[in-house]
Image (tube, rainbow, N blue to C red; front, top):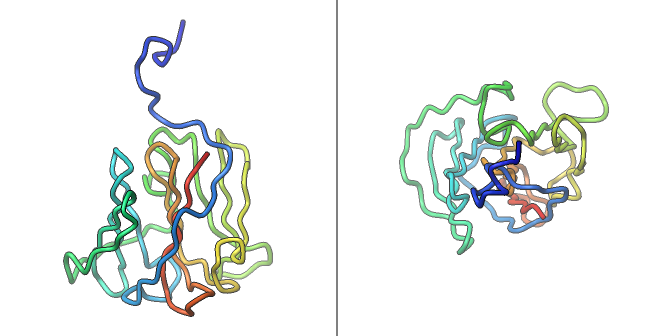
Amino acid sequence: MAGLASYGAPALEGDYSDWTIYDSFDDTDAMDTHLQQGAIINKGETEILLLDWGNMYAKKYSVGTKTLSARLANDIYYFVTGGSADTPQFKSAYGTYAVVIGRVAAAVWDADRLWVFKNGSLIKTFTDSDLGITSEKIRSAHISPKGKYIVVSGLLSASGNMGWVVLVGS
């Protein structure tokens, strides 16, 4: 049976094999603590809702204009589950892509790697320095519904501030 795409229907997920840095920006409201940030990317992959559980706020990042809003709301209790397979922001819409943070050497909280999986196979590895993040300070990673964007929080090397790195797939 031919796939829907052959009939002109849009693919539900993209076909990506590499990601590069699209944008990187400070967010001094973000807390420098493991798994305290969340990124929820809309269906059109044009807006990203950034959440910080530690400092309890929400902000909006517009992909096309690369702009970050002021706080949209305060006192938001956003609980990050730590990468459960059922948590949408850690996998694309149908699970074709998944992002995982961790480290090569055993330690509980400090991540120095981001792994990207496609259909269960590892296809890309980023180190903290590849992302412009201070050694062992990757804090969270999230992926868009189609797999095109990956959003990573961490302590940015260039500024020394907490912030976000947005990767775009090709």
